[in-house]
Image 1 (tube, rainbow, N blue to C red):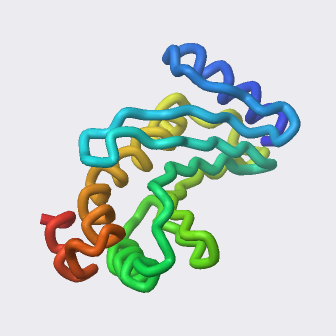
Image 2 (image 1 turned 45 degrees about the vertical axis):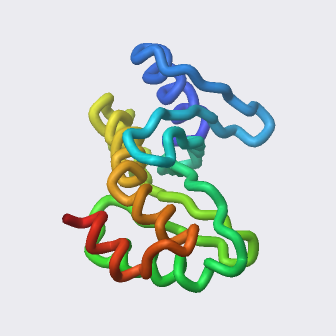
Image 3 (image 1 turned 90 degrees about the horizontal axis):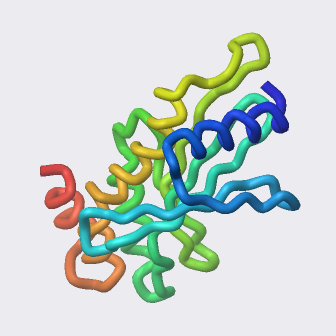
Length: 153
């Protein structure tokens, strides 16, 4: 499906579920937020429709330079075995996010409400599962290995 069609489909879905969002018509991305059931409390979400896929990013707080090596290890440990998306880390500025996507090939028709719902729920759920452990590592309270054990219990 092309980008314009995906933008229209995402708009209809967000309006149907009454999600509060903004759309940047220049960048062609949606912005939303979500409350979290962890110490992170809230996250910023970016939905990026492109030709043939929709990417969804849920952002964690940036990590300071001193804790970036530990966070890199934490993210590597967290990503091992994940099936629907992954954590990403920009070592240069400390940005951390969870990314997942929905394939939308031209011949498959529109993505379903279920697919679009998963695109929102899974990244938020991953931040809730790993958020406290991430903060423990990003703030130097726990080692990556200890934090992952806590998150995956």
